[in-house]
Image (cartoon, rainbow, N blue to C red; front, side, top):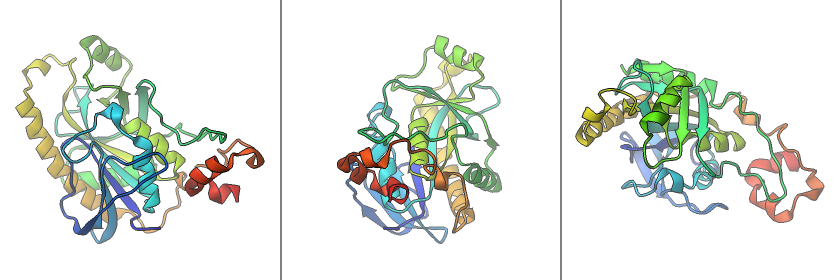
Length: 287
């Protein structure tokens, strides 16, 4: 079933995608349960696109409660080959200012116990994750953002923390000493699962404020952050529309065959139930 080749995951402050036409809700059940919300499938920039509100419409789901496997599997069920992930982040460097977009090329995991693989239950897969985002899609997103006038920076490390509380000052200063660029709570698991699903994935990290290391952090009010979220959402909508127009109809990327040399288990020993559950991503390799 191919309904849309391009998927968009919207984060804090972005619960719908302006510019959609002919859109409809698609509710899916996956082997991992229900995604965060119904997928909104429609046309954007002349292409079929599937949009998912990461935290659900109304922002009902904490980062730790997110069913990452269901969200990414749902995208795969719809035929998605490219995922643009949008998320609000804090800045760990003076150079990344509120309203800037950062398109990270690395992640650092500070979460605890989140499930970030489809494998297990008798089938072992080890993906390559040295370069965790799609270089092709990152290039497109950077071109799109700068093209619509957004101050976008390509490259940098996204530290993924557990949450939902924000960092202590001690933690924030340690992350800065490590050279981290931005801090968020969601994108690492999405990136890993998208790679296992052979989907090209890249993040647009929208800076809302400086993390608590900054001397002026305590002067930032909730109203200030909400104002930035609204402005970021407007810039995100412009960036996404421009990026969608640039995404090619066919792809020749590393992610497209990420599982080609990743499956370790002797096919004869894979339990039938596991083989069936993962057939959407492994059948072309297992026969």
